[in-house]
Image (cartoon, rainbow, N blue to C red; front, side, top):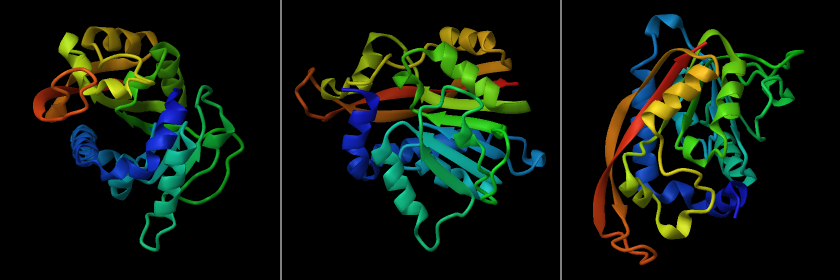
Length: 236
């Protein structure tokens, strides 16, 4: 099963998971606490936006948010939220696999609805619980570097690979599309630098307890384990 098919299947029930909401709230806090408040409202690109939880949480502080995901089911759920009367008007969600910084999907300004002649550039690129699904991180990070404005930055959050037990983050029934069991600090730091980022910093942003299986494929969730989450930062 691919990432697209798995997350299409899970889209309708995604928001019913309290852990997802809590982790997103922690990611939002980690990101906002590291932004310069004097820099003004940023244009944000949210990669792997899912049902829009992080984009919606960041929208009050953003000028605009372009939110993309490879799973159409996730984007459909997100767009249904954006149709609500009280939904923010500075977000645009689209289904695309972003591999080119000049992809036409980046031309539209969500804040105004206008379309630029060339792909827009961003002050901030964010993602949450996405890196561990990416088969090859090097071109992914290179693309992120390419979509940033000069001086723009990436802030990517995901759980840390702290050893063999990190595999327990996912139950065995949900290993489809999992490319790595968390993020290794030294490895991601070097990948950021190789992609062209400066002022690279990888640090623990928060920790969370998560219910895990007592035995592989048992399907229960009675035991709790603490997982550290990293925030991976770099500036163009």
